[in-house]
Length: 168
Image (cartoon, rainbow, N blue to C red; front, side, top):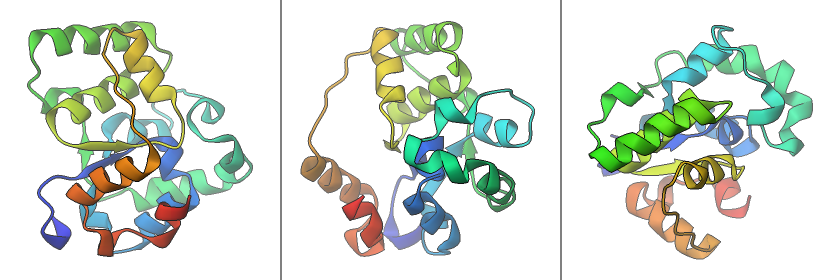
């Protein structure tokens, strides 16, 4: 991984379609620091029918249709992650199964859950993933922005993080 990082960060669609997400996609130094859920590529190619309104933050929705094709192109070559890429304990697998069955974007949330438990950090601009994990039976511990940024710096050195991420 870039910058001596040991684990990548997963980017939720709400972060991908944000200003910071676009900056990360365009920055060759950041591209080695993240992965995307496999289902996001399927969704962007039209193989999964999800509403952009459910997955993109309200302040990014106006640009969503213009950015969708651009994003699909840019994600080529970026590592993706699916539920089969993680070996989870039984309890975590039960939550994953519940996510797939009960959430409208169940496959996406299951991939995010599996990644979060088996790897590292998930960045999302919306609370949808946290709410889906909680609704599926997971225990969720929330921290404030300062602590969250400190945790993120454990995975991606501060020098590699964009100013817009720190301020957004």
